[in-house]
Length: 92
Image 1 (cartoon, rainbow, N blue to C red):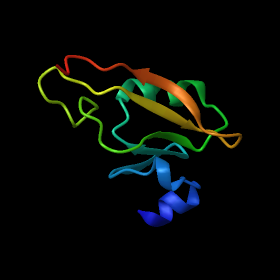
Image 2 (image 1 turned 60 degrees about the vertical axis):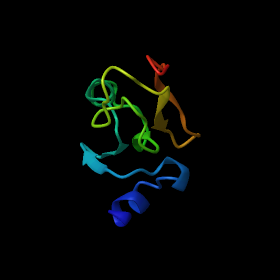
Image 3 (image 1 turned 120 degrees about the vertical axis):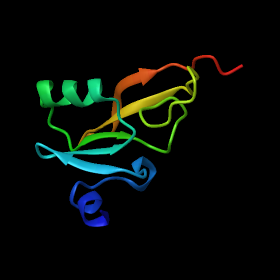
Image 4 (image 1 turned 30 degrees about the vertical axis):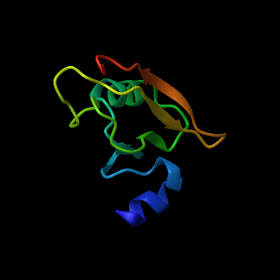
C-alpha cells in the first residue's frame, strides 16, 4: 500500500491503517461512506480523503454511541482542507 500512498502524495500526517483507491481518488483511514459518496458526486480536483489515526466512533471504530471529534480531510493540491467534521459525543 505504500506505493498507492506515494502515488497519491499522501502526507505522512494524513496516513492511517486502511487505504483504498476509488475512481482515481485515495481514501485513507476510517472515512464515513457518506463522505466518500459526496467526494464521488462532487468530483473535486483533489487526491482524495483522509481520516488520520483511528478516532473512536469513526466507521469500524464504534464503541457504544461514543465518538471522539475528528475531521475528514480533503487532500487538495493547494493544501489539505476540512471536508467534514464530526463532533465528540458521549465521552463522559
